[in-house]
Length: 120
Image (cartoon, rainbow, N blue to C red):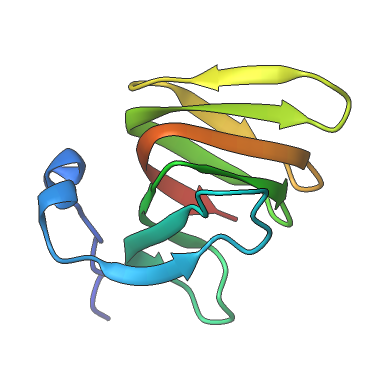
């Protein structure tokens, strides 16, 4: 039996300069500008979960509703996530965050955000 292949981004930060798939505008924008996303899928299991990849988002605000646990390592950019209960976290390059399933709030991207992620 063959061993499963390892999915690997050798230099995730370098993906910013490569061809990425346009994933379109955010689902629930708040005002203008409307943030747009693009990225590259690294792995998706049968049944769609887990999923891992690279994601970029241009400046803008939108409502967030996290349906599945999401682990993120932010490579570049700046953002503020504000939970519905008022809690606020600031994101800067190098930040690592776990957004639990059920988290609800608002995201405001101040400077184009780049991350690698895994959704379980």
